[in-house]
Length: 129
Image (tube, rainbow, N blue to C red; front, side, top):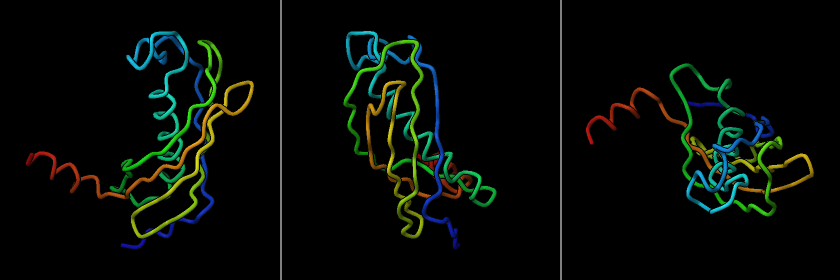
């Protein structure tokens, strides 16, 4: 099946950092700042949403790879956002460049790959595990 997703699709995911997003809660650190795993989830969400409405019914994407930096800490209460832009389409493999920011500027960057799946077939395979 051909998906014809145009390079350049983008989406920005935003959230206010809460204690549930803290490194201390994720177990990835011992202090109450925006956790790297929470940053990665925000980045993945932006990529997911950039293409979700452009896929045929019954199709979805799953994350398969991410390479990211998290260069600045963000305190609880500050807003963060991640903007994902589709930069390459290779069949069912989609590659995104992502920039994450808080209210003071860039906090991280990444490259993320997602794969287009037929949701029903994907889930059926999982039930056989």
